[in-house]
Length: 381
Ligand code: ATP
Image 1 (cartoon, rainbow, N blue to C red):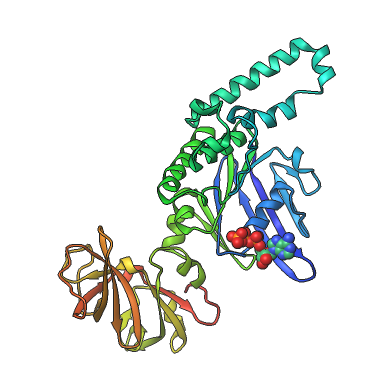
Image 2 (cartoon, protein in one colour):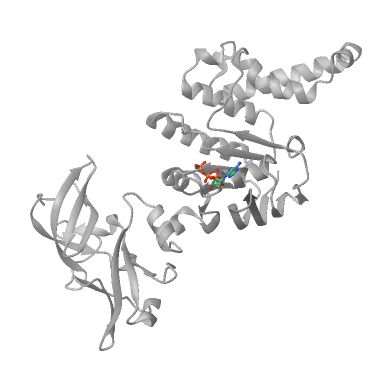
């Protein structure tokens, strides 16, 4: 087993496409790390550098204590699972899983003829490993079938089995679930988490889907334009996003942003969004930004219908009045599109609400969960 480390890694394609920009990231032994970010942010390139499929322009890539920049891919002891799992169509499921093992562990034909005893032991060992892993992934019934005789989900599990059976030091997964339908994706997501717990193999998982990142990662690293924005446990990233980009990327529906200013009235400080203002609690660092332009961030789930009991007690200072433009029923909650002066924003509201579209209603904001971002740097204050 081994951790993986990126040390000041740069990757430049051609003359000036900087796909990865000074990436420093430590993935601990046995950790499940998710690299997440929008298309083109450099996450696949980072993963491919660990695999040895791309060469770093600068910096060190470590697997365990070994600098692997110059180690050929086949000697890095990693296994990769891609979105396009590319099984061999003419081989059975069994042979697809066993193929890599045979290639690595069995020597040439004449060696096998002259070492038939050893060859038999190796073949028996491969057979046991293929059967064990097939059972673990619940595909043991299909071992004799060809890939085309399987569903997409079953094929993806064969691809996983092929990677797992090698017991690599590190798993690299690049959007492995994106070919599956929504239901199967959720199911396979849970299966991957369970497998990781069982096997404890260091895993780097690339996705553009923030829900996958939140639910699967022990930690998540959010990238943008090749630059690492934040790396932490999902709950911490959600509660304390480091900047406006991370705040908007993590969470669904996304965080509401409103142009504001920090103002002081007597001894009190407010974040003033023109049409309403909210007090800054306690020792909020934004108090040092009086007069400056900032962005107020409020997550839709931190806005409550005043007439439904919640853990937030309504007060004059945390209550706003807004017009309900649209109310979208999702079954377990409503997504309310609200308007207050120049601001259009979203709230997720409990199904017990009596609010109707077109009506004006009062909403309570959790003041402990508001975010303020410096407009100059976009960093959270
Ligand atoms: P996606 O989710 O769309 O796969 P990504 O975050 O994985 O995106 P990368 O594939 O790592 O992004 O690409 C990062 C940047 O590097 C992009 O701007 C991309 O166009 C560029 N890039 C990637 N591979 C090459 C290449 N072989 N030659 C030139 N530019 C490349």
